[in-house]
Amino acid sequence: MSTHERTPRLLVLEAGRAERNYWSDLWHYRELFAILAWRDIAVRYKQTVIGAAWAVIRPLLTMIIFTVLFGKLAKLPSDGNVPYPILVFAGMLPWFLFSSILSEASNSLISSAHVISKVYFPRMIVPASAGVVALVDFLANLAILVGLMAWYGYLPNWHVVFLPLFIVLAVLASLGPALLITALNVKYRDMRYIIPFVIQFGLYVSPVGFSSEVVPESMRIWFSLNPVVGVIDGFRWSLLGDASRLYIPGFAASLSTTALMLWIGVRYFRGTERTFADLV
Image 1 (tube, rainbow, N blue to C red):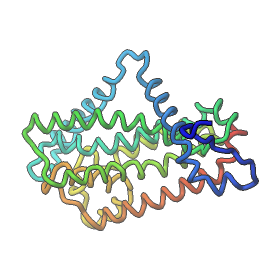
Image 2 (image 1 turned 60 degrees about the horizontal axis):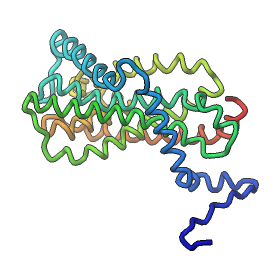
Image 3 (image 1 turned 45 degrees about the horizontal axis):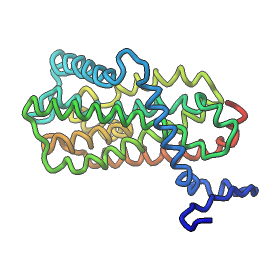
C-alpha cells in the first residue's frame, strides 16, 4: 500500500461507544454536513420562478411596511440620526436569520427520514446543515443593507468589527429552540402548524420595526429576556455605531436566556435522538 493512501477510519460496534464519541463524530462527519447543506441550498433555489430574488424581495417589503407603520404612522423615534429604514433593516437581519434557521430546521429530520432510518451518524448534523440555507439568505440581506447605507450616506464606525460575533450569537440563539422544536416535531407532527405562529408572534415582540429605546426602563430587563432582543441590539450597535446604545443589563439577560435555551435544546435533542429512526 502506498504511504500516501489514507488509512480508512474503523467503525467499531461497541455498546455506548457512539455516546462517548458523539461530539468527536460531529467533526468526523463534517463532509456529510457539507453534502446535506449543499443539497438543501440546491433544493431551495432549483427550478423556482423567483429563486434567489425572494431573499431580496421579502426583507425589502417588510422594511417598507415597518417603516410606514412604526416610523410614519406611529412616529416612533429612531436611534439618534439614523434613517428609519436603516434602523429597521439592521433589526431585520438577525430576525430573519433566527426565524429562517428555526423554519428550515424544524422539518429537517422528517424530510431526511430515508437517511436517518438506514445509517448511523450524529443526527444533530441534519438540523444544523438545514440552517446553512438561512446563512445564504442572510448574506443577500447584508448586501442589501450595505447598499441601503450607501444610499443614505450612512457609514458604520469601528463597532462593525464586532458584527461576526453577533452573527455567531444569532445562530446560537436560534440553535437551541431549533433543536428542541425539531426533536418535538418527530414525535408530534402537529408542531409544524405551531412554528409559523411562534415566528409571527415573535416578530412583534422583538424590536425589529422599532428601537429598544422606546421600551420603558422599568420593563427593559424583562423585555430583554427574549434572546432575540440582545442579538438585534447587538447588530444595531455594531452597524449603527454610537447612535445605537447597547443596554448591558438587558444584553446579559438575553445571553443568559440564549445559554439556557441552547442547553435545553441540546439536552432534549440528545435525549430523544436514539428514537428518531423508529419514529420518522
